Length: 601
Image (tube, helix red, strand yellow):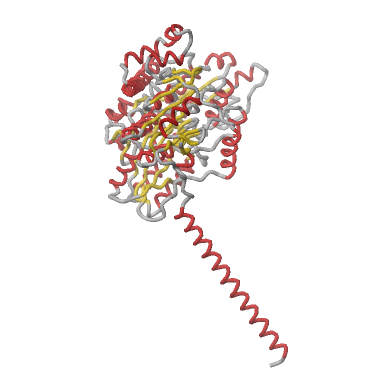
């Protein structure tokens, strides 16, 4: 063997050795990373120091939501950003504290709490009641002011304190909106409306100057029912007569004048609070209850106490998919139900062998009829794969929100869920006369009657007939699928349809809902339908993007959040309205939306 051959063999050997070493090291690194990941996963976060006999401080802020949603930068720029509190996290924390012997008191600070749907109020209230009934555990509520939703939750407390400059003003429920027909008439805007359903009032702001008698009748019945349940619960919690509470709300202006405008004193006189204290005095009271910790009291913060939920890796799973917000075509971020996005989550559940059943948690007033049908058909595919699907209605599951639930194996709703609104409409505004006033005209050639229609040139009679026929067909489709899914006749469905909105309790009586209960009840029922006794719950959801997480963190860190006591301005209301209309992307302009689902204070 020549020297060259020997050198060649030597270097080849070295090369092979290096290659083997490289592969070995790479494999070891992969194994090390996997081992570290498993250790971190099962080790969990560092334990939180919970003082024995201390207090858990819960200060929910902003709106209560079923799922943390992406915040819109445009809303941030217009000053309308409001925080979010995720309902499952809040309930998990209260339940954990209930079973934790180290926690003796729950401090409920509702100062920054915003809108809470009636159904969400009831489930949080039930959790608070369960916590309080545990031996020796108490709830102390505090706030600068108590509006309707804040006071409902505070009423479950053993002690309620209000600031000397605060008030208790649970105004009641209402439904109000702006009507634009006068403006459109002034500007010569033509709004072409195609609808089915006497009570389908989403289009009324564009065709009327006031609420129609049919809508007024239905809406008044709805708010009366919600207010009745509210009054009964609050009165029972505070040990006062319902009539006395109603009188307090109805004559608040007169009663306030009688105490020279001292709203806090008025609330104390009527038994709605237990004391008038500034923050430092509340702290002193809590030091008496749970013990001292320096200048404060012995406590743990809610965010530290409730650790992030770790998805289960093994065993049978009941998958929970949150369907929150308006229903639109295509992809959509959290807080909006995109047909493609939601179909992908349902497909993921269908193809995962560990997922034995799905609970579709709906909090939506509807949207695109086509998008709703796409999602419902994906629900059917999950059912065809042998996996039960249970619809669990949160605060609202109406119109398109009811559409996607209609053929589930079971539908669960809270007594105060707003649901129904079985009806659809088409809405096409055109501006040909508006533009004509400033000299802009529209003309051209065509080969057929359906060519050339536009928002700037108007629509033809033929197109109008097509749109109305499409709406009529969509409504019939809606009626038929509800009849099939709820085992009702079409005549029975039609009798409760036409866009009429119901509470969950009434919908249950009418057969539109199978059972009354909350998310936990729906999960247990889904497991029973799947014949699964031991299971874990997994939330199947799209993660927030890095940009969304950064924006959310920035809002929390820099306080870019509107407080609960700051009402949205007219610019914000207009921005929200335009954004909602702008999200309408059904290619046929056919929508199933519940306008009456928006409650006012």
